[in-house]
Image (cartoon, rainbow, N blue to C red):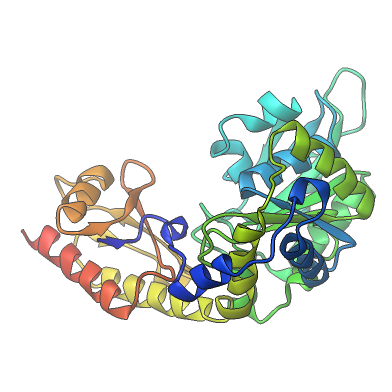
Length: 342
């Protein structure tokens, strides 16, 4: 199977598995796992923050950040396509008890002017606005990279209005590799930020949430509350450390494969794609062939050993990653030609 459904489909490499087998471990919940402790210290430095916390997933990072920054009934502002709004099972309302105020941006990115339009005076009959979140890269924006200037303008605008800021950095390293900008530079101006290891970096799980020491101390309380505190989690953290050492720079290969896939799709009648919009490892395209839709196309591809994901009635997403090489991309394109030609 050429699995382009998501970069979460990556599997640990043999060398990563060996690093996991050799991991020095202890009781993470008691702060005694040396591999976890080294990882969070390293990530805090990478992100330019005072402290960090190892968690099972990026979704937990987001949900804990909302709960720490906000009180129930308060409001979070984010792009209308944000992961916290559409892909976390209603967690913001169920766990943090917050309201969501969506902002309509372009490809998942909004500017300071759009944020200002949503800001309002603090009045008792309206939810108190507390937090602004951004997603780097923007998933439903096709893996679009937030420009550094836009991030800083949004953060400055939020802080000037007395709001906190949070960055969902699920694919932050993809943005860094594509742009040449360091993670700490992107994260500067954001009160909390997290990075994911279970997507393009190829680890079997784990994410790190970073912020001030006080923020992380409160986040740890939520970690216990939600059951995210683990024991000998250094076994998984070792995979994350290995990924930092070996799988960050190679994200450039995924980006090149995504561009190759997009260029091939652009040549196929019945499909529509904006090749210039493919900035990282996410490839979105539309099915316009008569008699076809996204679900039907994905089912036909799956029958030929290629997996992509329908993201709407006519929109398909393909995600390049560590486990798909150039030959796999060419196989996927051949399957698309066969399906549409047939």
